[in-house]
Image 1 (cartoon, rainbow, N blue to C red):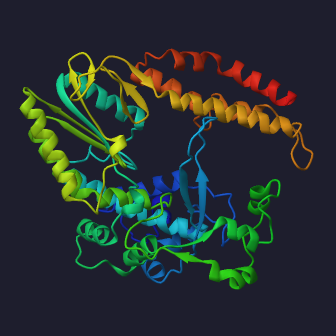
Image 2 (cartoon, helix red, strand yellow):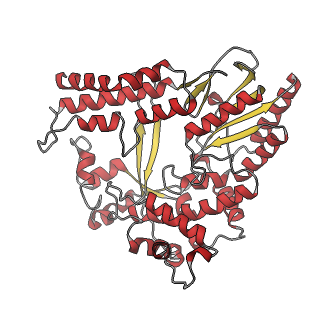
Image 3 (tube, helix red, strand yellow):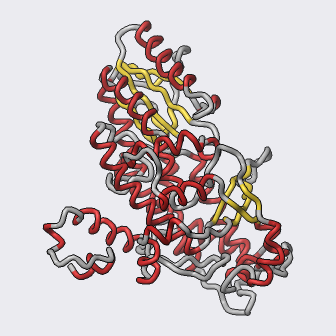
Length: 457
């Protein structure tokens, strides 16, 4: 009881359990206990976390947030590896917020998510938006199982799997503000919420490459990231003032930085009316609709080919009507049918696997997407090779133990590894996948081989 009052800055005399705010206050205690880490990366301010009473007191004061000065994000462009294959590499935009800003965003992500969870329950769409939810107690393995089991039960059905193009980059600020206001039940955003909205939409950022130079380092330095992260702040106050003209700003009327603690929650708020409209139509026709961030699946039973055409026309016409707010990624959007035994391409009726949430399903069997396994082996072998080239010593001459590799690439009691994930998927989805079986059985031997090769390279 004392902990609940302490974490929620509460000085009421009444007992918590009879208070109307008890559930939210208890949820906040749980949230803080989960998001209690102090991040190791260096930023413009010193490292703090929600576990610090002074930080909780600050972020829970609405007046503080209304006038809070946000630091710029640090912006990276990371090239996604093709795992040895030739071809273009799609850069991934990454943004890191400062430490105190992260705590502010976490607090308001929590508050918005609490309100959002109530809204979706009231509007009967609680099981539609399945990503970034803190009350469903499921992961993508469970959601994939729900989708595949629904297909099996529905038998003759249409399946539409879609992906929205550059989802976070194209979030329209005016529409997001409208949806957030509807969620909060206000005509005008309160000052603290408006401060959050303004800074997550027209966000400032500093390029990583510029910061390296501004901090007196060189990009080609060995162990550069580790050196910078060993500092209290990425720039001194003098350096910040000297180079602050290097700060950029999102001046467009679209886009929020993917990766901030609040962006995921806001993306669900952005899609509230879309989710409700599509779900109402799908449920009226005895189907299911699920959306995981920018990926969605629609399953609709049909009796005639005319019904298929009607469903397809309705769904895609509605999505087209929202052009400028969301756009489909054509190459990742596909239509299938299930004939009670197999999944087939539509309209060519060729047997195929559908790809949803990292799993492949052909109507009977479920497999883990092969690319995920390839990615695991690639990263594990690259890590072993990198360590081998350094003669298994750190830059300070300390020995690097092989246990580090095993803790990352084998089972781990503290943090779930890919092997743990594969085991869970095999159990929950009853995978019929020889590659996963081989991975689980032989991964330690593969790690051992990679270590030996790393020593020889």
